[in-house]
Image (cartoon, rainbow, N blue to C red; front, side, top):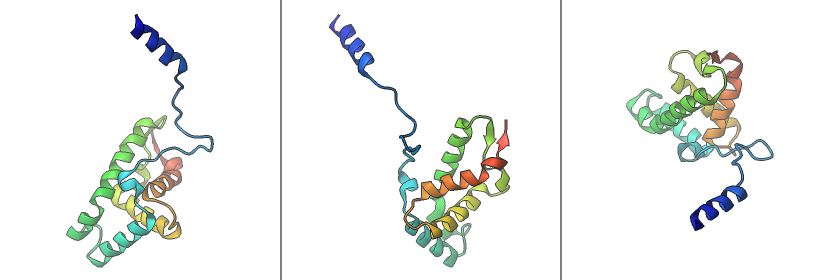
Length: 132
């Protein structure tokens, strides 16, 4: 009986979780998403020096970023209403093109992080997203 009362009190006093704060901002991740733009730009400069994004060294430096983009792409496409692929307009090699876009964006926004560059990419692609 005490447990039922406790559960009722907890249910009555709990609040709904919000997807965004008052300014429309939300938690964007961590992991590779929280890598600073200067770190990404430096890493990509190294990739270009060592043969590009598809070279063995390029793959080694960018692999975790690629995995982050793939996971984000899946999650975004699952969550966005009437969208089957927000990245479709990039054509072939979506992940590499995404990282190149973010690298260029980060060059202009050194105070930002990788995840914010990815969100900016999605903003530029949303009008050309493939619909369900």
